[in-house]
Length: 406
Image (tube, rainbow, N blue to C red; front, side, top):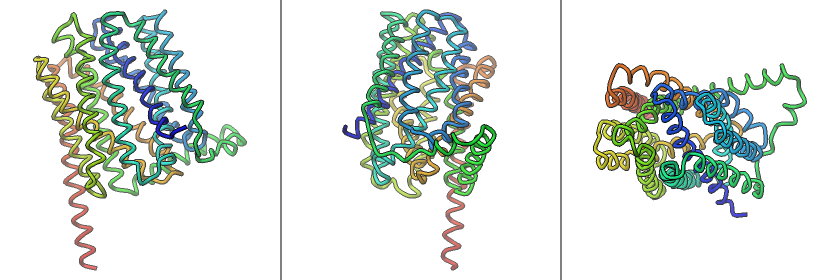
C-alpha cells in the first residue's frame, strides 16, 4: 500500500476529532447555557491528555505504534457513540476525558512514526502535507459539523464522527510498513515495580535531553505558553458565535473554524516551497509564527462583525499552521530511539498548558470582557516569543564571538 495513505489515516482521524469538538461543545452549551460548563468540557478533554501524555511517549517507543493507533481509533468510536443515548452534562465530561486520554496515544505514536516511513530528509515536506490534510479535515469537519448539527441534530454528527475513526482504524489494519522493533518483550518480562522504575528512567532521560539542547527547550517553552493561550480562543470562539447570532451558533462556530482552516491549507502549500527555512531560520520562523498567530486571534475575537472575524480567522489560520508544522518538524529531527518520548513531552506540555488555561479563562471571563481575556492570554504568548527570540539571538551572538576568538 502507498505510504502516503498513512497520512490520510490521520486526516480521517482528525475529521472525527473536529466534528466531535463542534457537536460536543454546542451540545454542552445548549444543555447548560454556561461558559463554565463549556470550559469544563475542554478542561476534561485536556485532563485526559495530561494523564496519558505522562506515559504515551514511553509506550510509543516500547510498543508497536501501529497497534496503539488502531486500538485508540476503535475506542474513540465507541465512546463517541455513547453520547447518542446519554447526552447529559456528566456523560459529556466523561466522554471528553476519555477522548483526551486516547487522542494523546494516537497523536504521539503517529508523529513518532513519520521519519521512519518517509525519512529525515523529507520531514518538513511531509509535515506540511500532514498540516494541509489536517486543515482540510478541519474545514470539512467544522463546517460540516456546524451545518449537520444545525439542520439534522448532534446525533447524526456524532454517528458520522464515529465512522471516521473506524475508517481510520480499518486503513491502519490493512497497512504494513517497516517499523522499529518494539521493546515490549523486555518490559513485559519484568515486574510491576521494575516497569514503573523503567518508565521513570525513560522520562528522566528525555527531560535531561531537552534541557541539554537550549533551542529545543526554548521551542517547548513557547509551545507550553501557546497551549495556555489556546484555551482562550477555544473557549472564546463558541461564545463569540453565540454573541453574533445565538440562533445560528453552531453554523457560525463551524464557519469561523472552517475559514481558519482554509488559511491553514494555504500555509501548508507555501511552507514546503520556502527552502530558506533551515537551521536557525527554522526556529526564528517558528517564534514569528507564534507572534502573528496570537495577533490574529486577538483581532478577530475583539470584533462582532462576522466579515472582519472571518477575514482575520483566515489570517490566523495561516500562521497557526506554520506554528504547528514547524513544531512537529523540529521535534522530528531528534533521534528515533527517543523521538516518541520527545513527542510525549510535547503532548504533556500541550495538555498542561490547556488545562491551566481552561482553569484561568472562565475566571478572567467573569472579571473582564471576552476581548480583554483573549488579550491577556495571547499577549502572554507574544511577550514570551519576543523574549525567547531576544535570548536566543543573544546566545547565538556570544557563540559567534567565542568562535571568532578561537
